[in-house]
Image 1 (cartoon, helix red, strand yellow):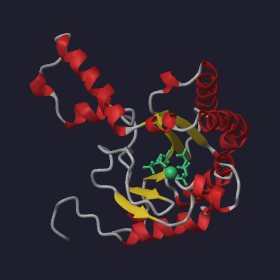
Image 2 (cartoon, rainbow, N blue to C red; image 1 turned 30 degrees about the horizontal axis):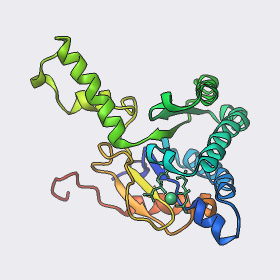
Image 3 (tube, rainbow, N blue to C red; image 1 turned 180 degrees about the horizontal axis):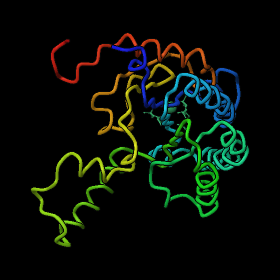
Image 4 (cartoon, helix red, strand yellow; image 1 turned 180 degrees about the vertical axis):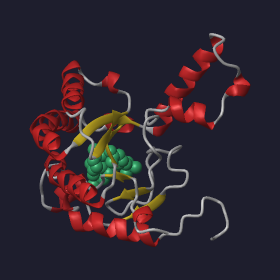
Length: 238
Ligand code: IPE
Ligand code: IPE
Ligand code: MG
């Protein structure tokens, strides 16, 4: 296998542990979220350095709406502020911002900020940063199935014509390759409704590091670990 092939094309990260990081320091949960912005920059720098083309970050799940309103509001503010503050640097670095998830549930203001960040970074060619916002895999699959069912009902396709490509193309991730490596911080070993379809053959890596403590070196270690994995895709070892 060539050296080049061992670099994951798409890395997805479940950024977890902000609340525990804050609690350990006697701070409010939102301070943990604020401390989670620098590690996003670090992950992006490391991804660009390694030649990773897609970096997906799980930033807000559909289930996260059930948290206390003050925390949800603080997260919304942080998303808006971050995309505005970071956009010039992202443009300079050749980063294109995209989103997955159902953005209709966000306020008009949040939707506007997100759309502007996407538009301003649209020419970025080095790394595609995909933010999973109001995302959950089951919600994504439900929306995809509704779309396919509507096409069948309209007589545009037969049920028998539905195959894996039809489903993949109806998901929010239609334009992107499946993740090669999924990293979760904070020591939890679960996917929490993240990329369930797309993760079919992803390598999974769980690290005890809390997200606010995540660094470029931590990303380097994840990429090194990925290079040691033997991906077989159900076939026999070559
Ligand atoms: C991850 O950190 C960020 C979001 C889910 C928005 P948490 O807020 O889940 O932190 P813990 O898991 O409570 O430590
Ligand atoms: C997953 O983390 C969602 C994000 C990182 C945005 P959670 O903290 O919400 O997941 P659980 O509750 O531990 O499964
Ligand atoms: Mg958590």
